[in-house]
Amino acid sequence: MKPTLIKFLHWAFFASILVLIVNCHSTNEQGEPQNSSPAIPPTFATVLETRSPLGRVTGKLSSLGKPAACVPDGSHTASITYAESMDSYALLIWRDGVIEQECYFKEHGSSLRPESASMHKSVLGLLIVAAISDGYIKSVDDFASKYLPEWKDDERSDIRIRDLLTMSSGLRSLSSEGGLNSESSQFFMNGPAARAKILSLRLVDKPGTVFRYANTDSQLLGLILERAVDKSYEQYLSERLWQPLGADDAFVWHNEPQGFARTYSALHARARDWLRLGLLVKDYGLHNQQQIIPKALVSQMTSSSATNAGYGWQIWLGKDAQEKRYYNAERVGLAVTQSAPYSIKDLVFFDGFGGQRVYISRDENLVIVRLGDVRMDWDDAILPNLAIRAP
Image (tube, rainbow, N blue to C red; front, top):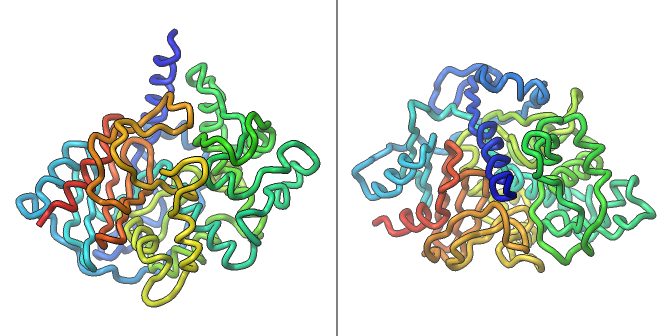
């Protein structure tokens, strides 16, 4: 079987998992009745057996404004049409202090908490920044082995937290060969083995020299964070982001029966709470006149890294037209189409597999949230360009 076909089948497998929808119920901003925990569609029961129990991220709900209308024949007609054509569940467009459009498709509503894929990585980046601000982590230039004693006195002792944040750890990538039996698929499925797997990876490049996007780098950051703050991931996420932002409750998948959150994927949150996170990044860590995260650190997080001008600390930066945005320096394998230059020059965004997105622009005072089915034909340029051109 050709390598390209193997890779396609591998990502098709991930797509079949990542399209799962989690509907949760406890009162939301619109007063809709909700349950206290996610209801998992039976189709995915066998997959989720390895992710049980879920960890609850406790919110402290405050208003983000009244529900906004979805006006298919208004100024954002083209944006709504594109989102709907791409099997979206939710589209929120916030501009200049107002939610201009709040659309839910496929009979979904604001209570929907779908799987977010790698958008979770950007939340993790914010939490690492918070831990630096709180003094749990001294600096992004700390050696990872300070928190991972398993790596002391070996070749990996040169890896810094900065290298993990910028996807340039130098660690070996997990193989995608073998379909469901591949290393990467097994890492995705066999949660309890995640800790041993990430701690066993060996160097193949000098740390800080080669960009190679890897779920394992983010999972290592999750382990470092929990050890540094001496709290569960969901507890620290609740205290440092979810409650200060006035978000509703959310859920994370656990790798192990007693915890160890999966920090490269699987944060189940509502569209309005993704909007809250986007606004926090847009405003350099400021929320309701409270500096939740220092401005200087958010600025560093959203600046180009040494190994990839289009990547910061677990967050992507919009660049000029490049036809395909690849996830490694070799420019092979999975890529996302960018059919045109961005009309927004300072765009940064949370990137989740198959088109899960939070687009952010400070210059344009704009945040866009799109949640939906996995679409391998997602075009990164279309939605932000349509939104900014709307009158």
